Length: 547
Image 1 (tube, rainbow, N blue to C red):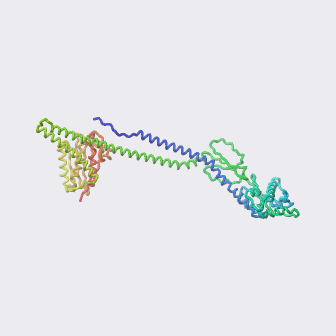
Image 2 (cartoon, rainbow, N blue to C red):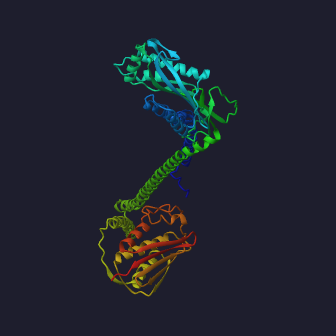
Image 3 (tube, one colour):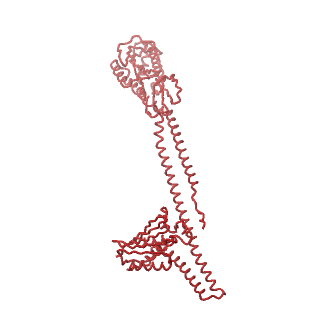
């Protein structure tokens, strides 16, 4: 008989395509995320330079906002010793200050080198220069042209402020900065900030041209060296090299493997800039450091998708197998019912027909009716018993039986039913056994029927061995049938499962071994099978002694 084509199939092509698409998306995600990480790091290379600038220029801001303004605390009466001590502290705290000039000034009427209206003028009584490596404390009677320029600018600002300011109101921060500070490239000049009382005094001095009067005032000029500014690289992962360069500096570098950016320094360092340079290979380390967590997340997500896909596939596969079992069960069960029903109908039609039947024919049709009715009854009983076993609704009626006599009765019954079935029996170390005889009989009947059904016509042999152990009785049913493939052994005790072979095309609904398994489990025992294709199968049932 030609084997029917399977109506169930697994679309492995679709599974492979889905796996390939998922893998492609995963690879694309890895590549895109790496490129985006690289662009993000490169973007930070150009944007984080402001943070480096802020941290680098922080000492200058401290010097300009805090240390320079300390001069005002002397209220114009700073002396050479105080100036010397002050400059030493500045040199110690701020390496970029390399020279300081201190001007001891006098502001009064008719005395100044620089004069304004109201007869006010400013005079340099003495000037002292302080260098980082040496200090010249001798007064300078003649200033260089460059130094005179600083003095003249600050003096004019100071006198204009005195003439312009309204002593009834406080000056704004902008007015104070424009008057008492002068910031030029590499240089900061500062004069002592006047209070409103100081301004009143100066105004009164300027009004009285008849008498010579003056007041002390202090001025400092700080000379700065931008190359001594300490670069604070707060992002060493981005910047391989940072240097201070002139604004006009432009390195001729055609190397495409280098990233270069710059940012100008502010205020007195305006002629200089911070020059940033990193090799792309250097940035790759930072790109990889940031990419690894992203890669790990993508890998975990990919594995998660694969696991979900596998679980869905397994669930569908289980459902397909279950559907196949149910489908086969319905087909086989319908066939099992249809055959005896058809035979019964034919026999009944003959019996109820108009033709006269002989006594022999009536007995023949009666026997057929009885046999087919027994088949239907046996099938229904098995289904009913299986359901009761699953629902634990069968009550056990244990009796003491003689195992050898019990087995011989079943063997004789099968020999009458199947004359070509050779059955051997051995009983060792056991005689009486307490058990429900109906349940034990079902086990014998199903295993013996199974052995006969799946044996070659010329090798229908079965050896039954009953061995008594300390706590168990072991029943062994060894045949020389067609055997079972290794891959099928895990499924043969499942309900509705049928092994695909030439002996199993019709006449089975897949309940025999499943029914045995349920019976043995219900009694509290175990059942196992050992089989080799074309050599035979051995079913071992272990039942506990009942006390």
